[in-house]
Image 1: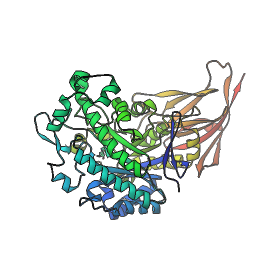
Image 2 (image 1 turned 90 degrees about the vertical axis):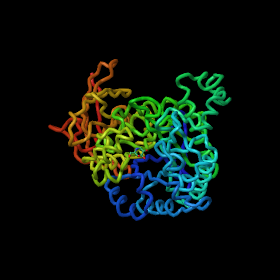
Image 3 (image 1 turned 135 degrees about the vertical axis):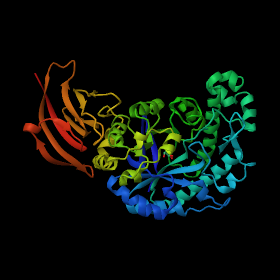
Image 4 (image 1 turned 180 degrees about the horizontal axis):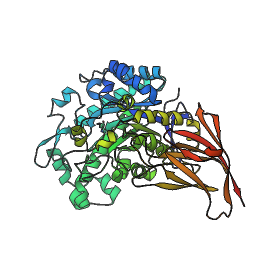
Length: 507
Ligand code: DGJ
């Protein structure tokens, strides 16, 4: 088996699993699920089966991997790999090391208890913040050593290459202030901007002199990226599978520290690429309602798109079409996936409030049912999706805020998209279109209808030749109803489905 790699050709990145393109139709488990194999067996895997995932995103934590300094316990990652293989599912591991949502709650007890060696950040009033400082070299080195131990173990143990990628840390950055005010940080902040950062930005002087109001956040970005580079590069040196970092997005109320200051937000992607080159890409955790706006930001600079956390509401069943069809995503992964599968209760409001996530994002009502159908549809035709992703022959869409429709353009036809009215009973409209040849198209998705149009510079009018409803199974097209008469139109209701249509341009 070949190890997973990221193949980059021009602006297109493709995840290769055993040398073949792989599209991750994924979900991310709750933070604590991966800490018990029994819990996984009883309370996670059974609820994932109806969702038709091909990849599970799940945690491996430093506290459980290295409970005693230098002694590693790999039983959890090994067990997760074995369970995933029994389920026929691939894995993405989340390395919860020094930082998780801006805090250091997943470091081993021996790190938590030795604040002399592993110093924590402080806010501007001198109050300790519950997170090891990225300037704490001792902490970064110990994390890098543990991460390297994990990666080296995976290289030996994961012979079937079930683990496709690893996320380094989780939603890094400082919460509670715009920068670290620990004594080490104070000293570094007062000094000149380090040469590599000064050269990169063409500046000189201290951070304040060089960057003014932006200085505190850029200072944190630099130090988080450098620390992450040290950790990621060490792991990659022993086992070079794709690595990425994820971001808690910049959002209301917009001041650094209300979102984690220094994390891989879109605005600072260039810093992350420059100072953490061992990280293959930056990922957004998308709980905000404007899904496509975030995808657009995170595909800038040729950044490959993987969404490790998407809102677990019904929106996911439509947003996945846009992620794959419009933004060429490597994969898509709603968070809290086992709760989606069992339509369990949403987390309490105080937790979501603290994470600045709006409650509607976690409305699980019928979300598993629809996500399972979207994933079944897309999972049946992954070869086609991999063939056309990132080309002008495929386009995806999902209903945006206040949007009623759109126009999708191909070489010989344009398609007017009209979304069905929103309802609480089924997801908003979303789908994708593939141009199979000049006059033959595949349409799929839910809650929209299509009007084919001739191009502006083409005087012909468009006629339907045929509309065939069907499905893909194991990448083979299985035609079902031939639509004609009253059904002779391209219309998708609440059940995600596929139509193949042929058109004619007549004069
Ligand atoms: C984003 C984090 O990355 C996840 O681990 C989790 O805490 C969710 N927020 C909300 O539950």
